[in-house]
Every structure is written in structure tokens, then in C-alpha cells.
Image 1 (cartoon, one colour):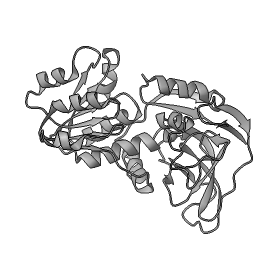
Image 2 (image 1 turned 90 degrees about the horizontal axis):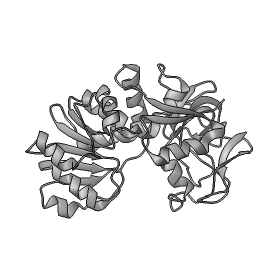
Image 3 (image 1 turned 30 degrees about the horizontal axis):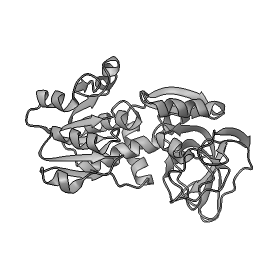
Length: 317
């Protein structure tokens, strides 16, 4: 089978032929038709997860995918050959098989679920990681009707889904976006776009909400100092969640702010909730660019350099 692999960390991914994996006890073999491209794929290429999943090189990149069950291993009853599925296929023991390939093996009890019937494979592959993070984040923040939430990093995959999900909960969403893409976030339901490149974001929020907003979901800030600065947009007792940097909880707690780093697990339960949103017409999938499998390097570069609206996906045909 074709696969995009690395032979060592921090090396250039390349296309190579590999043997088709075989499902073991409790596993399924999936013929992939599309793979989602995420920032975590670049981090995996650079060795960020080796303490969790020791590598078995060559490593096939990619975690998100959608396709058809080709074969079910012993002990599997939830899936049968021919089932359309999607999911976030995390390594069980070592990092070896990924979704930038014709086939992938994954645990049938992991983060894999029936594909939304209203989506094609490319659209479904754009969902697993970012939509699950968005949903888990809003759950953790306990976003409710009538609240105001600032989403920092709103135009990427996570932000695209978080805006829509927060609006579905009855929240008012402020979304960071450059002026040229302001219409994008408002089209998803954001009440206002805030251009973080034009002046201080905290000052802009306080102009609109002098007393502060109820919550912040930050999926973009990497600098702890910048993260603490953003916390100043919150009202007393406000909640702040980051997906990237560790929140300095004691210091922020002194200011009456509940801050945390997102802790979550990919799951079939989260995927099922997302499917229900999609099939009910409550969640739109936005595809920025579709690359063929052979252009995975270009796809990774686009995601790494940012300024993506929605998702970048690999088509595997």
C-alpha cells in the first residue's frame, strides 16, 4: 500500500510502499478514502509524542481519517466489512501505522464511529480531532445560554467547530480573526470578529464588555505571558481554557479566574455526538484545501504556516 512516512524524527516525509497492516484481536482494518491534516501531525513528525508512543520506523503520519471497514479482527462485533467509518486513530502501543495511507488498523473500541450519513469521506475526515477538541472544550467550560465567550484562534479547525457549537448552546461568541476573514467567523455564527493584528485584543474586548466576558477558549496562544494577558478580558469568576499552554492556575485564581489546560480523550461517544450535530444540520464542515495523498508535505506546510480557514484534508484514491 501507499503511505506517507518518516524514517526518523524531524525528517522530510515521503511516499513509500508498505505492507498492508493486518487487524489483530479487537481491531479493524480500514480502507481509507481521506485523512485530516492537523498541527499534531507535524508535532508527531518532530517527535513530540515519543514518550507516549515509542516509534517503530518507518512511521506513517496522520491520526484522523474516514473510509470503509475492510476486515474485522477476532472478537469484533460492532463493525463489519463495508461499514463507513470515521475517527481519530491513535496508536495503541507504538507509533507505526497512521492515516496518511491506503489502509490503517485501529482498535474497534477506540475513537471510531459510523460516518455521518450526510457527509462524504473528505468532509468526515475533517471532523475527528478538531471537532472533538471543540466539543470537549465547551463541555469543560460549561458554556451555557446567554453567556459571552471569546474564542482565540477562531478560524482554524477547532475554532470553526467551536464557534458553531457555542452558538448552538445559546452563547454569544466573540472570535479573533484578521479583518480580511472577519466575514468567515461571522458566517459561522460569531457575533463579532476581533482583529488581533490591529491593536490590543484585551482593550478591544473591554470596549465591548467593560465588565468582562464569561469565558475564553484559547486554541492559539503559545506564550504563557500572552495567555495571562488574555485572561484580563474575563469577569470576576470567569473561566479560561487553553489547549496549548499550561494555565498558571494559582496566579489566575487570585484574580478570581478559573483557568485550566484541556484534558480529554478521543472517544466514540464524542464522535457520536458530533455526528448527531452534523446530520441534524447544526454543524457545517469547512474545507480550506484538498490535497492528493502524494502532496502530503505541501498539506503539512500549509497547516504549519497557519491562516487556514477550516480544514486541510488529504484525498486518498
